[in-house]
Image (cartoon, rainbow, N blue to C red; front, side):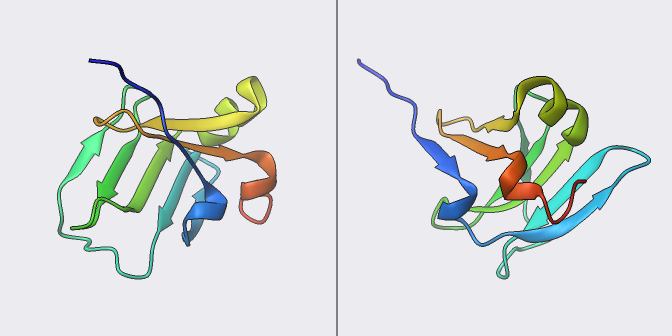
Length: 96
C-alpha cells in the first residue's frame, strides 16, 4: 500500500503556549485541549495529544531551541505518519 507524509504547519493550527528555557521545553495547546486526554510520544521524543477529530491539540517539545538551532525546524511525527513542523518564524514570540 502506498504511503505519503502530510505536513502540518503552525498556520494550520491555533496553538498558544509557553517556553521553559531552563529545560528547553516548549508547551503548545489549542483552546479545546483536553488536558486529561492521552498523549502519544513521537519518534523525536515529543508528546502530542489529539482531539476526537484527530486534530493536534497539544505539543510538548523537548530540546525545542536546540533542535531549531540545529535543524531550523522542529518536527513531531505522529503515529499515522503526519508531521507537525514548526519553524523559527512560527515560534519567534516564544523562543528567542
